[in-house]
Structures are given as structure tokens and as C-alpha cells.
Length: 108
Image 1: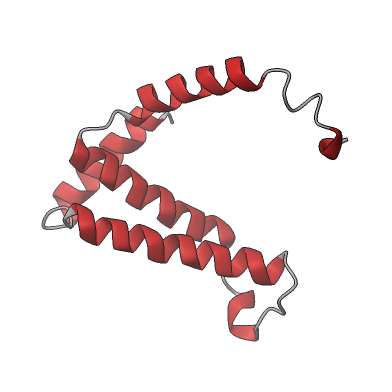
Image 2: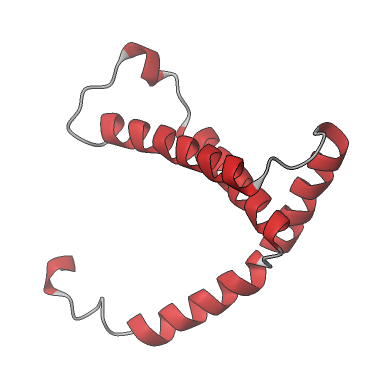
């Protein structure tokens, strides 16, 4: 599945199961909340904080998928073609960073 298809799937889901998209500000707040849930798992599972018993059952993949869902919603409602934007960004990063990371002593 590519991003264009993912945007269509989300749009169809909203049309079939939701009443409408939440407004952009609500979705931005929702995105922040979902990213916070990802951060909590990462900080406790891979960072220095201890993981609470209630957090051990949380699935990082599910939380990342929640982030992606809201990003797709925001793209749909603001008219962003994420596939085109992602492809352009990857091309730019490839040109800009082609040698940069290979010569970074910190990454060796």
C-alpha cells in the first residue's frame, strides 16, 4: 500500500464510519496526543524511565498507526498529496544527505 492508497482508505473510513473529519485544530491536538503516547512507550521501554505494568501491554505499532491515521486525516482535509510530498522529500534528502552521514564520525 502506498500513501495515496492510505489516504483513500482513511477518507473512505471517515465517510463510512465517521460523521465527518474533526476540524484541523482538533486533529492537530489529537496528533499531539498520539505522538505523546508513542513517546511514553519509547521513553519507558527504550529509555531510562522504568516501564509501569500498565504500559507493558501497550503496542508501539498500534500507537504509531494511530499517529499515521491522524496524519492521513490532516493531509486529506488540507489537500496535501502525501505520496507526492514524501517522494519529493526523499529525493531532496537523498541529494542533500548522500555523503553527509557516511562522513559523520559520530555514526561510526
